[in-house]
Image 1 (cartoon, rainbow, N blue to C red):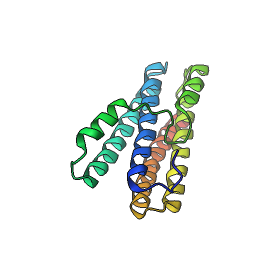
Image 2 (tube, rainbow, N blue to C red):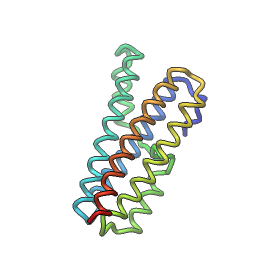
Image 3 (cartoon, one colour):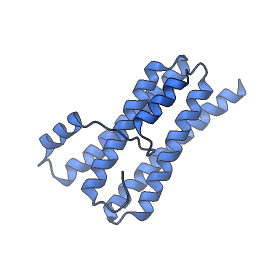
Image 4 (cartoon, rainbow, N blue to C red):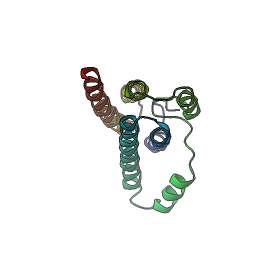
Length: 163
């Protein structure tokens, strides 16, 4: 788990793993959701997390000027991400998902808002406490991306309350 004391390389690797854990969870949730709109929302969130992984991978590769592309590709294929960007273990979220059958969009939305809110808090905290200046910039960008996810989810919540 990230603390802010990592150098840039370690920060990117840890952030990548958290994004992967979140993407995997959202992909799983999109399959298990009973409601079509909830399934769609989780699918979109999973795609966004994949874009975050691509962004982090691009940063990693640009630092090493493609010297370690094969190593990074092997790393991305072999990694098993056990924690989400919210700092919540994937298995804890999966058990939460198993306990709740999402028959309505609001249950799915509340879970997604919890994940994205915690992710925003974590990245914001890391942006303030990171020792490495470049890592600060990465964490700031990631927190801004989480803000976009939260705004997206708030718009969905507004639509649901209007129905």
